[in-house]
Figure 1 (tube, rainbow, N blue to C red):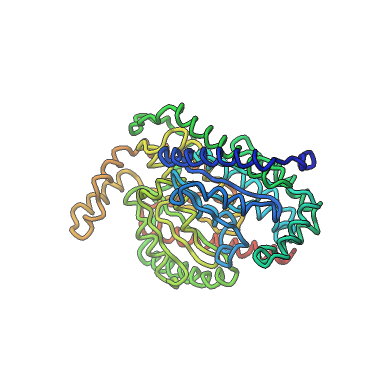
Figure 2: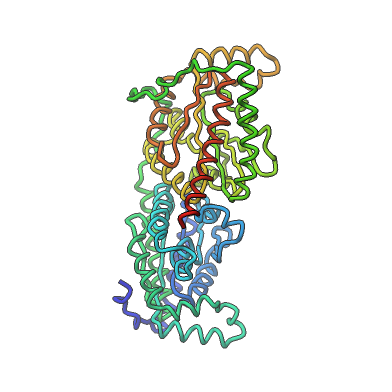
Length: 502
């Protein structure tokens, strides 16, 4: 692929100046349109060291409004960033609606330079590229315009530019040891780039290959394609039908099998058994907290369930004995305006626990296929594709070493009504009961179908659901702590086995 590029292509100075002026004027107009239409834009600049990416960025930003773009130079991951899945730091930098984000290097560094220096193995590459494709597809599905450029240099031009930059005191600091390694291993790096381009040039986010030996040619071609990408994306917004206003669900087909109906809600514990078993499980969990710190294991526990199912009480018993310095509880309510300006998973990526800590989410990304689905806050196309997006997200977490525990606390409609009534009649608990709780109760059959489908479609070997019978609070609390303990123990055993055979 790359060896078919004609690297001798160039432009005369007068032609270059004329084209640049025209393109930069168009880019400024398009930037304004993106802001007005709330179109988020991602520009990925990849290519060889000294291929002119920095000069190109400087030229682009000199013409556009600085309030509407951000440049993200991507260097080696920091110690903090290495505590998360590799895409975490890029989710952090995603543009909000109407903003242009320019990535000077990007997530592709992980499958190129890190691969060259054997920071990732060849065996990991297919998984990483699959994660990148999923990430970019999710962005495009969410309305982001993506333009990706690979600026290619001949080996002779690469070596010449590195020498030239290294001699100049004003540019020598830009030449890294890693840049010289690219030149030294030119053929190998080219092979890695070829594989990356083939595997990650998709219909939703294709690569544009740029002949880079002539900087004039390269700049004009990049800007020409960027203008075309933005124009096309804005045109699609113009012809796109307005999103229909979907009323709350009026009908949901029954789900087979009905997983929730199979749960034995009569399971219970006496107070004596509860106190004895809870203490035993809590002590084990406290000991495991030291183990996950030692083995640098991140743990994430998701709590979902019916209103008044006892999530708060279960979370309290889960955390009672833990060292508060290495766990956190994050309750999720309706998204803020800032969160609505990003992909719905953005706010959850930002709050992931680091290695060696426990994160507890009271509600989670499953709101997309539950409350947002039933109440009509998400289009049908949005919540239907969310099953795949959720499975991809959770696969990235578990492949990065996370222990992911997903709990659905299940109670009967009769038990919920009993608890609602108790709260209504208790002045100290009335704050827990809202008008929305009563409205949600009226839609129990619709939520039941949505819950069943969510559990069926997102139960995977590495991220299974645990349905907790919660009519009896004693039983539910012990079951929750026991489930978390078992999941952490299983991961520690898995790691020990892996180390033994490695």
